[in-house]
Structure formats: structure tokens, C-alpha cells
Image (cartoon, rainbow, N blue to C red; front, side, top):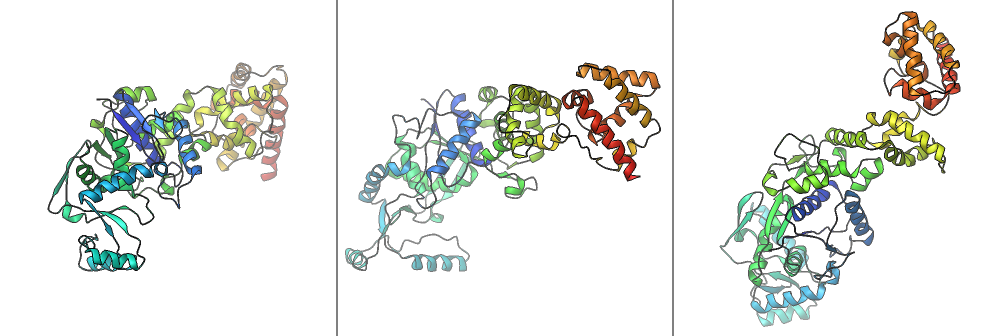
Length: 488
């Protein structure tokens, strides 16, 4: 049997972390088993679905490195892969259920259904349809038609049946059919509902495994009943745990629940996002926490997917992304930094070859300090402009030390005598000052750092100074020392 797994988003908005994790787990499982991965679109929510959202989702998946064998954009032998293009397929299965007596037309109005729902809630029962239209006479049907009532189609749920699901993540889960209620499979406008269309799609596309979020578990008994009524082979189901915020509450924007492409635009790397979301509910066998996509494919299995909720930790994401930033080439980080620096007004629209080389050197100087590339703007003040602002009292106190003026004067003297500034020449200057003045490294490095950057922490001085250039360094030091005098 060839494993066939699908990811079927509803294009009503961008791809978020939860959806990306579902797609990743589907993709990893299919690739790990040597199977096929399909992306289809469930767009029967006509009011909210859009091609813009569909394009956004596909773009996000491609950015993550998740590729598919069949789908809306690449085709395949089981298409169409967009639900609104499959209506005739659903209609034939609807007719089959009606003829078998497994479905019926329901003429209840919205007001009647709401009154029934409120009545059940008042009695402390789960709201469900109680079957008012299950056994209508021909006369009743004609009366409803004469009144202009447009019916829906409901599935006739069998009574007193235990619906068993052997979940690949959760083990055996049992539902009582009496708590389900006859549910709508086709709306009054002829559009199939999710629980009906998804069964027909999965069956006709020969999907063997349905791996999705835990929120779909409650839908599964309805889908299983449809499979059984139509005599179709059921796929294997696996329901992955919810993702919670760090405070164990439902994910929201304050926890980081935002679109995948938002992370891209902030300067997160796709390999970091993939690595991070793979660990949301799946655990490797050893202590390793960094995995490439190919490594994930080689080790992924549902056996190590947890039943308990996963926790979205922004600090962990930044830690993982920082790791991949440090592994990246400075040229890669420089390219990603350009739009952020342009938007902040630090770079022109057109970057020369010389300018990009300078930017690459800047990226090399700061990339170990970045959690995501957009943070480059926070470091830009170290490299752009001639002004320096002494950051805080700690920095100010450094410049008030006993040997500061002697150190600064000697530094300026030695700087003036160097023709080409390189990290090596800067190291030589600083080391020689310490020897001549018989001062420890901190008493040399710290005053120079604060005078040039206004900060006590940051990238290495031997990387900053060559990027600034001799004249800029000289100007900054004079301005900083004058600022210190003015502030006293």
C-alpha cells in the first residue's frame, strides 16, 4: 500500500503556526513512509474563502520547504483539488445516501432549530438535532415545499451504536452515536458541509492516513459513519495535540499566534520555523534539538507524537532561530537585513557592490547577537551616523574612570597612525595600549567601546571599528567625551 497523506486548508486567512505544524507532520509522515503528499483546498465557505488566502497559504508552505506531489497548482490524477470544483462528485454521493435511506431532506427553519437547541441546553443536554424531519410523510413534504422552504440534507445517524476510532496518537477513542444527532451534509444552497465533503475527498483521492489537529477529533465519528454508510474504506486517523501559549491558555497573538509569512518578514529562517514547530508535540529519541528537514524525515514517526498539549514558547523559537542565524553565511544575513535597514532609513534603495560587502561585514559582526534578522535595526546605530548617545549611567560611569582620558588620547594617537583599519590592526592597537599603560583589558576596551558606541555591551570592537572607518570613530569619540563634559 502506498501511503497517501493530505493537508487540506480552508483558505479563509493566512497560514498560522498550528496549520503549518499539521502540514509539516503530514509532509514528514508521507516522506518518511515513501508515500505521496497532497495539498487540496477546502473552499466551500463561500463567504470567507478567497484565492488571495489560498495563494498566501501555498506561498507559506513553499517558503517552509514543504513540497507536494499533487494539488491545486500542480494537478494530479485525483483532481480537481479545490472543493468548489468537485460539486458534481458530492452530488452523486448525496443521491446515493438519499436512495439508501441514510440521508433525508430537513425543512426545519433556523428559528425552530434554535428553539430546539436552547431547550436542550436548558435541560443540561448536549445540543443536537432530534430528528423532527426524519420520517416526514409525503403530505408533510409537499406542505413544506408549498411554503417555499428550501431543505438541507441530513445524515441519518444510527441509534445505540458505539463508534470506535483507533487513533494513531491517542489509541482507541469511542463515541456514542446517540450523542451525535442527525447532522447536515448538504446546505440549502447545495454546498456540502465539511464533514461530508472531507470524506468524499479523502476516499476518492485514496487518502490512507488523516493526520490533523485535536480539534478535529470530535468531527471524526460523523465522518466514520459516512464511510460506513457508503461502504468506503476508512483511512487511519491520528489527532495531534493542541498548541497552547506559555501560560497554558489558548494560543493568541500575544503568544506568537501569527501568520507564518509574518515570521518570514521579521527575519526568521524557514529551517528554524520547521525545526521549532516539529518539536511542538513530537519528541526525538535522544537529546538533539536541531534537525534539518532531511533529518526530520529520517526520524519522524507518529509513535513519538504526544497526547498532551504542546507549548508555544517564543523564547525557544528565538533560541532556535538564533542558532540558524549563526550557522548562516554573513552574505545570507546581509541580504535578509536589507529591507529592514531600508525601511528604517539606514540604506538607500540601490545597494552597490561595495555597499553590500560593507553590509556583509556588518552582518558578520552582529549575527551572533540576533534572534531574528529584523533586530538588525536595533544595532544599526552602532554602524550608521557620527553621533553617539551614552546609553545609561553604567556607560557614563565607565567614561568617568581614572585612566579614561589617557586611554582615549593614546587610542586616538595610535588610530591616526594606521593606514588601513582591519580587525587585526584594531586588536594590535588595543593590546599595545594595555601594555604601555600597564592596564588590564577591561580598562582599555570598555572606555573605547562606550566612547564609540555609547554602550557597555555589544559586538566586538575589532569588528565595529573597521566598519565605521577612522574619521567616523574619531568624530564619535570627540562627541562622546564632549557629551560627558556637558553632562557633568
